[in-house]
Length: 247
Image 1 (tube, rainbow, N blue to C red):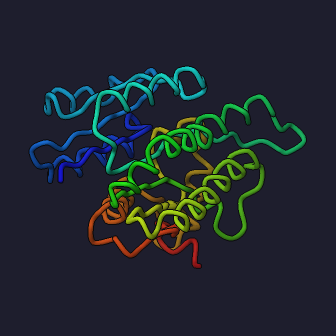
Image 2: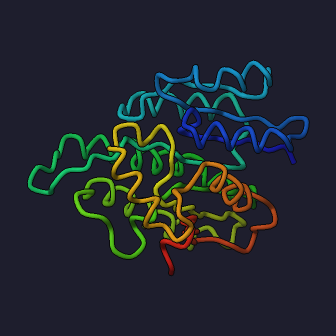
């Protein structure tokens, strides 16, 4: 069976690395539908090296109209995705709750949660009809145990994703569709460019392994949950934290 990967947030550091990992084991007929937003240049190297395999889309996930057009085009153009990987999130803002920005939170929900619901509603029932599917989200260790201060909007959005994962996992388990999350601790990617170095360094010092999470730590865990070998694992949030989140 040919595999069709739908990856939202594919232009992120994690998305790029995951595509590299997956492409190393691609068979004829496999393809990737790769969504980014204004930053597709970050995956141009992979597109050029794999002509006809990666199909990039520039889609603003804060726009319901743009998302709907994207889903319609994917539905009309490609086979039903066998794998959905949802990675996008706006950069976390460290701010006290008294300064909670509701307009920005609406954008967070659109990018992280509402787009996931829309995409899953379009394709997960079709996966169930095919009796196979892998759905994977990226969570955060902030939703495991005690969250950090001043991260209300980010933690709320990620917690909503967790609820979606559990609900879909229960509903579609009998149809051969698994739905899971990976939850890294602070990961040193472009996502942190607005985070003060002192906070990043403090997180590394507090980690039992003495460093922050790397993309190379997370991608193999993602690849496993997307694999045939993970067929009996669903509804889980897998911590990738170096021991900083013990559950």
